[in-house]
Length: 212
Ligand code: ADP
Image (tube, rainbow, N blue to C red; front, side):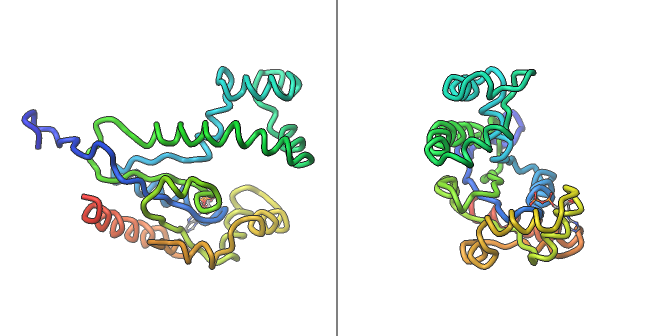
């Protein structure tokens, strides 16, 4: 305790633990349990959207490069159109990635340093943690794991997607076995939620010791 009776924020730079898993594996569900234990977390998908919100340098540079037509009437990024352009043109994809990846990385690093934070670790939630250089930011990797069939069923139910659409997305992601090979810890999410919550609590206690 500090002299003012508050817990001392002595973990100036908490360890960063990555949390990943395929689409519909349960990342958002699992990270909510960590959040209830007071763990600070940042979602890489949220940050990827934030860096191209209206008023950002990111969006201004995209509009400068692709023309104002890349914006919707409301002035937001027309993602569907941008996806089409970069899908058809690898050079444009490279241009876009070299603009956005450093911005996303910088913003992730900024948001992963909460003020007045007393726990010794924070979480970076990212579906592409292992596929991108984001894995260089983390000292440990948690994989949220479910069998592919569970992944498909839960994603279809959540997003009202067709099976073949979900299967295509899964095929484009890292295969389950390779992802598990890279895990320092695994959360089995093919379980009732109260069991998943128990796994999260146990891992949290372990991290408090490991990083404390
Ligand atoms: P992700 O963030 O990895 O895409 P979500 O956390 O959104 O995955 O989970 C996918 C869907 O499955 C959601 O609708 C969620 O409510 C549901 N879900 C997640 N974990 C469980 C579980 N253990 N039991 C039942 N449903 C679950």
